[in-house]
Amino acid sequence: MKNLKLFVTGMILCTAGLLINCTGSETKSLAGTEWKGMANVPDPNEIVLKFNETNCEAYHQNEMIENMKYSQKGSEILFEKVSGGSPCKVGSKGTYTFDIKDNKIHFSTVKDSCDARSGTFKEAYFAKQN
Image (cartoon, rainbow, N blue to C red; front, side, top):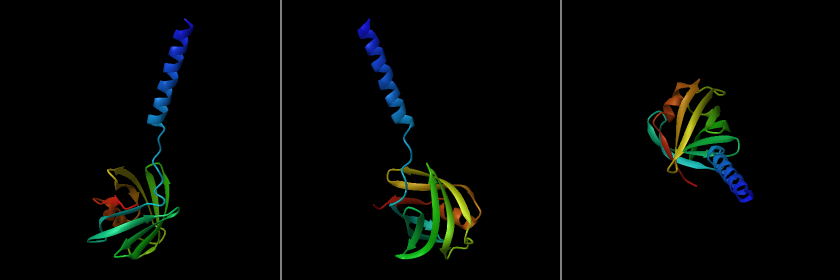
């Protein structure tokens, strides 16, 4: 009887551990990552997105073309324009979700006050560089 109780207790603990591992995994921070891909800026061009702790910088031919503050909660990200050449107004905000699969990231618009930014990400996939 004692062995049965130990066995059942062990099974419950193992199952609980597996459930926590499967459901408790959070999306990793984008800070410190770089992604390269084709984006409509406004025509298709290769750009690199560089994420640090607080900002996302977009580069085209090694020249920064846009700087945005960002905050991330799981797989949701909020961008806010700081500077750059896009038609988006400084301070304009956009909320996106992102999905990373096979070392490629894709952003999907939730809502954005700037249509130009959402058009940039619409069909773009970016490959991880680091």
